[in-house]
Length: 279
Image (tube, rainbow, N blue to C red; front, side, top):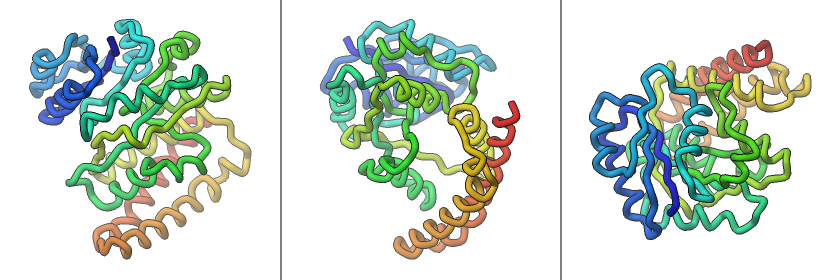
């Protein structure tokens, strides 16, 4: 039977919708929840719907450690991972995801994420830019998201998740596998609702973590890590893109917020990147 792993932490009421969404899929599956000692009722809901709940003690959560623990606790050839706040859009989320493993070289497949109805304009734009039909991804160095994905067990056995980084462990894992001639696939017909309305402080913190991970995962030429190339140019490009989007969607909020959001993004990512280069 197919294993589906859900990582959870204080996600009421979304956790119930997510677990029920898994149960509504055409393919029967076993649900394992890795619960980070939730205190808002998440644990109780998980115990009602899931097949097994493993407690991850508060203060001990390290992404790679938890992912490896989940892989050891499951048995299926392909293991599906779904964040607790990723709700399947319909009953056709799971089968297309697993069908992506039609080539032995495919190590992982990931879903399309769609913004929730309450998602603010610029975060909606970012979600659609990152996922969408996948055409933008083809121009990027690398793209993957563990939030709704499936992995091949044999690929994990050859390369367990890195337990020494706190951010972008999914990017680190899939990028390394790509260097070993594995394939990473995007499945735009497997859809989940997943989005966040970050404050500027939260956005800075997220970008700091991803910037630090960037520095540790990828190789960088002097030009690529230069302030102009890594920070200033993306800042200008993103603000201009946001303004065009704001005009197109008639969103004054997006137009006003763009410089502040992208400046926070640039500062966080730059600081994290420099700390990562120095570590």
